[in-house]
Image (tube, rainbow, N blue to C red; front, side, top):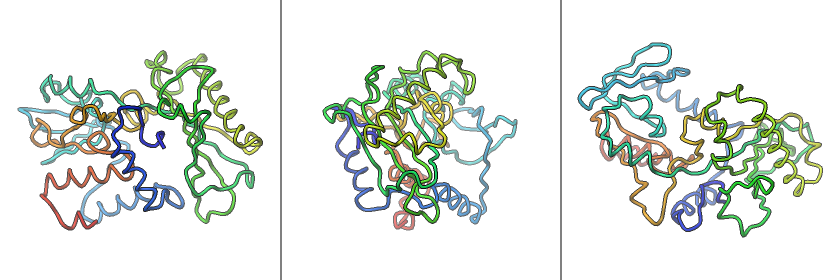
Length: 314
């Protein structure tokens, strides 16, 4: 399950492996009809409590004066003010948009120097009707299981070393899948030569490279399912650059900062910051995923309201 948690030999702590596994052992692994419904449900809770969710409003600047956030300014020029602010984004992205004087240089340097988990080459595939069976669990396929701890390596001609693939659950799911998602671990270095380009304008060399890597993935899938190509209706691909630009994570990191069993404290990021009314949450503070991110959210909420039995019961 290394593709699920960024496992690196000799470095990834055992507790990460344990927590990710217990999630699959004790609970369901997916939402019937997609996970967007979770976001919509959370939005409804916020609005019922008198809050407001503002979408498509990228924050361009956070103004800080005397170690206190005064306002945030969005791309469309709107300004927002509050008593407290919580950032769930990657700290590198936070540093980009906040006043440089907000944090001590030593704090910035420490977080910027932390290694990040690897990224992925992703295929989102639309399948022909009745062409591929629905599989109700996450699947893994490796060329060589002795390579499982070194999935972050990239050698053209030998990549991908393995795959993680799922058939998402549609509403009223029947015996056949409608879509498939395939992730093949890929380090940022594989696409670094195009890092100063923009989505849709990365050039013909990049498009040709991406097409070749797509074919590599399909060929590996065909070792497992010989007729797999026939099931494909349409393919959309994403590279570490796509992930970097869409999620604003450094180097397209899937799981934020890499945890290191050799130095656990180094990768620990506190919820409180030197900016008095700015707190952190998200996968860079704690564990990633649908298990870890809510746990870090609880910790951040309790940093504001104190230990709360209602929150803990949830």
